[in-house]
Amino acid sequence: MAGKQIPDSAIELVAKHINTRSNKDHGIPVIGHEGNIKTPQIFEIIQFDQIDDSDRRFYAIDGSYNSEQFYNGLAIAIYAAGYICFHRGKQIRMNSSDDPVVLGQAYYPQNILITNENHLNAIYDEFLNLEPVKYLLNFLNDSPEKIFSFKKEAICTNLSKLLGFCQEVLEIALILEVIDRPETKAGDFILRDGTLRPVQIKQEYLVNLGEYAHKKQIKIVSVTKQSPVKMELAYTFRQIDNYLQDQLKYEYPFVQTDSKRQKLCCWFEIPDAVLKAAYQGDMFIKKSIIGGRGFGLFMAARLDYVEKLQNYDWLIADVNIFDAIPQIRAGSPERCREELELIFKELTRLTQEHYILGYPYPLCEVHNFISLKRNFKDEIIARLKYSLYKDQRMDNVDIENLFLDTHDRF
Image (cartoon, rainbow, N blue to C red; front, side):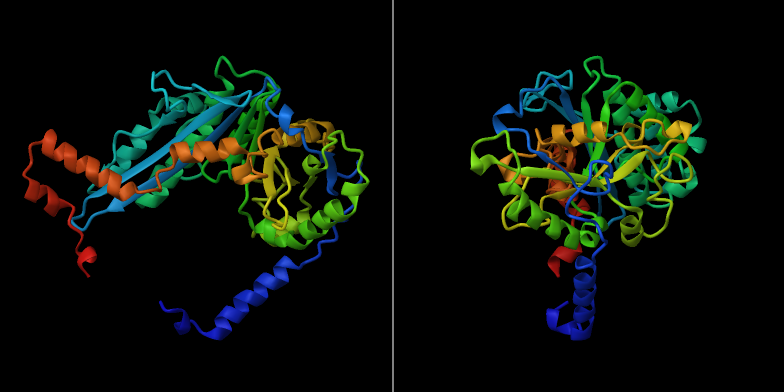
């Protein structure tokens, strides 16, 4: 659609909405107080020459899915999830292969062909037999019908819903796999893109996973740069940035003596009012292990600073609620500031890579490792054509006709 066909009034309404939300003052002060973590908690970034001086392992998990429907009723669909690990700044091998380039561990299905609804059921059944998924179900000690939020019939209603389900549950299963790897030890981090509140698994089961990680002292943190919270807090972020850069930076007792490397970081718990304004429904944002979703606690964090790109380097992090509120099972809402301070301080070991300042680089690397988004159609068609010709001895013309897309001729 040409831009001139969209009414000016519609564009103006969108612009007004964005302006209103991005200039909303939620009353969060720029000067924090140690006794109130809903105010900015400020600290100095770990010095760049020390970022690899840690024995912690930093794992990163991500997933992806994609599909392609051809004009003749044939569809190819794949989901995937995997993880990588960095130790002392270097990626270490997670798989058993001898490939010098591919060091991460990934899982893919064998059933990728869909020509009728029965194939959706076959993909679902195969998924339940993937090793990480079987391990998760065994750990949660219940049937899939009770663990998952939706019945098989609802999940297999359409292809995108099924693929989304498989990706999300597999990512959660990989959290458990990483926790129980023999080399994983207390103090290690598991990072995930997004949140710790997936819709596909009921909260009571996710809470058990979060508590298990906490008892083993494994830090689980989900991170996202894209969240409606960022628009709600845009004004607040600007005010905090201005205070840190224009005032506090010249008064702060930095350990780093090089003024060009002196950077202040910040984190705070996101207040309920902000979450309610950003998300629809109380269930998703509830700060509880009962009646909500998942096992996270939403925090905002600035883990580096990019000059003249205010708001760019703020993250929304979902930390394990058992790390943030250790006595939540006993009914105590008291936050553990020391634990949260450690988590965000340690994350600055990962946020100083020049190509994406402020964002943990292992999440960038695992995304590149597992993503099925780029050139998916061209790659899958090329490989299928080759296999049909080489292995199935099909005629070239017949192969080309299989994948002919009449829309390309329009």
